[in-house]
Amino acid sequence: MMVRTRFAPSPTGYLHIGGARTALFSWAYARKHGGKFILRIEDTDLERSTQQSIQAILDGMAWLGLDYDEGPFYQMQRLARYHEIAEQLLQNNQAYYCYATKEELEQMREQQLAAGLKPRYDGRWRDSKQTPPAGVKPVLRFKNPLDGYVTFNDQIKGKITVANNELDDLVLLRGDGVPTYNFSVVIDDLDMNITHVIRGDDHVNNTPRQINILKALGATLPEYAHVPMILGANGERLSKRHGAVSVMQYHEDGYLPEALLNYLARLGWSHGDEEIFSREQLVEWFDLSAISRSPAKFNPEKLHWINQQYLKITDNTRLAGLVTPFLAKDDCPTNGGPNLTQVVDLLKERVNTIEELADAAVYFYRPLEPDNELKAQHFTAETKPIMTGLLEKFRHIEWTREIIHQEIKAAAKEHDVKLPKIAMPLRVMVTGEVHTPSIDAVLALLGREETLARMNSHLSSFPG
Ligand code: GLU
Image (cartoon, rainbow, N blue to C red; front, side):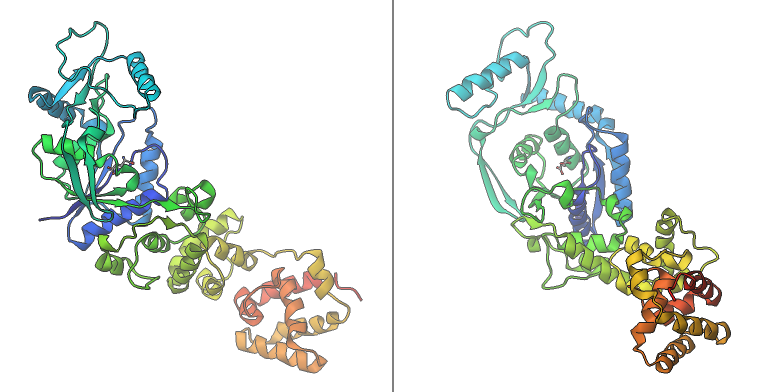
C-alpha cells in the first residue's frame, strides 16, 4: 500500500507553529514511507477564508521546505463532486433534507438544556412525510446510525469508541449548497486515497462522524493519528506571546528554517535524546508511535538554542546572503565595507539569530557612537598617550591580525599596563561597544584606513 498523507489547513489565518508541526508530521510520515504528501486548502468557510491566508500558508510551507507531491487542491473548486456524493446519499436514503428553521433549532436547544439534556438535533425531518414549508432552504443531513458503536484505533491515542446515540444527524450541505467541514473532508480523503489522516486532536471528536460517512459510502477507512496540542511555555493555550505567531515571523526574526523545522519535530516527538538532527535523519527516524500522548510545551529558549547550533554550522556564504537584508534594514549597506563572509565567520559563534548577527555586524559598515558612560570610563587622560602612540604605530605596520596583536601587546608592555587597558578603549573607539570578538581580528577585517579614521575622530575628545 502506498502511503498518502495530507495537510488540510483552513485559510483563516497564517501558518502558525501548531499547523506547521501538523504539516511536518504528515510530510515526514509520507517521506519516510516513500509515499505522497498532499496539500489541500479547506476554504469552505467563505466568511473567514482569505487569499492572503492561502498565500501565507504556501509561503510558510515553502520556507520550511515542506514540499508536497499533489495540490494545492481547493475545496471550493470541488463543489460539483460534493453535490454528486450528496445526491448519491440522498438516493440511497442515507441522507435527508431538513427544513428546520434557525428559530426552531434554537428552541429545540433551549428545551433540551432546560431538561438537563445535551443539545442535539432531534431528527425531526429524518423520516418525515411532512410537506416541506415554502421559502425555507433546507440543509442536507446525514442519517447517522441510531445504535451501535464507532471504534477506531488512533495511532497516537489508542482505541477510541463512541456510541452512535451520542452523535446526531450531521449537516452535510448547508442551505447555500456549501458542504460542512465534516462532509468535504471525508469526500476529499476518500477521493485523494488518503491512507493516514494525521491532524490536531481538536478534531478527534469529528472522527467518529467522519467514519460513519465513509462507511455509508462503502469506503475503506484510513488510519487516524491525532496529535496532542501545543501549550505555551506557561502551560496554557499557545498565545501570541508564546509562539502562536506565523512561522514567517520566525523568518523575519532571523531564524533558520532548518532550525525551526528541527525544533517543531521535537515538539511532541522524540528519537532517544537526539536534539539536533537533519531533515534526512528526521525522515529516517520518524514514527507515529514516538509521538507523545500528552501536550507539548513551546519553549522559545530551546528554539533559540537550536537556532544557535545551526548558525554555527551554516556555510558563511549563505549566512552572508541571509544577513544582507537585515543589514540593509539597519541602514547599513555592505558594499565597499569589509568582506561580509569573513565578518559573519567572526561573529556567528556569538549570536542566536540572523537578526542578532546583523546587529553585531553593524560597526563593520558604519561607526557607532559609544554612549557617554563608556566614553567616561575608557577615554581617559591616562589612556590618551597610549592610544596616540598606537595610532602612530598602526600607520606603518603590516595590516594583519598577528601584527596588530603584537603591537597591542608591545604597547601594554611599554606602558606597563594590562592588555584590557589597551584593548577596551581601542574597542570602544572603533566599534562603539565593549562586547566584540578579539579586537585584533576586528581591526584586521575593518582595515587600516577605517580604523585610523575612527581612532582619530575620538582621540580629540579624550581629556588631558
Ligand atoms: N481544515 C482543518 C483545520 O484547519 C483540518 C482538518 C483535517 O485535517 O481533517 O483545522
